[in-house]
Image (cartoon, rainbow, N blue to C red):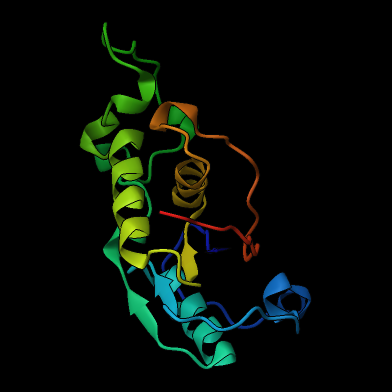
Length: 163
């Protein structure tokens, strides 16, 4: 899994730090029977094309790998947000704040994605929060138990999945 995060939808020119990225490492597990699966969002698509070319595989778009939708909150600075109580009887991860997606919904689409790729080696290029939720799915944890570990830009994570 590779993380591609950012705040804009522009293509970036190569920067010197990119050559030091884990993505530039020469050790590459093979074979990638499922090729590269990517979010449909531009930042991930740009990264996935580079990775797919390096591994000699096709990159395939899968909307289930996109970022969590924040609905009306999209683009809002955290300093502009106001606290709202979680509705009684619900867990915070089950609320679609701002009319976007709940973590529960992201968890469901990550589960569906993983069911479709089976246990075949797959390169996944997605976004930080989606990858954190996917790691919870792979570990057998629910949407209520996502580990908010740091995942840096272009980090490479290796995980096994047995459906």
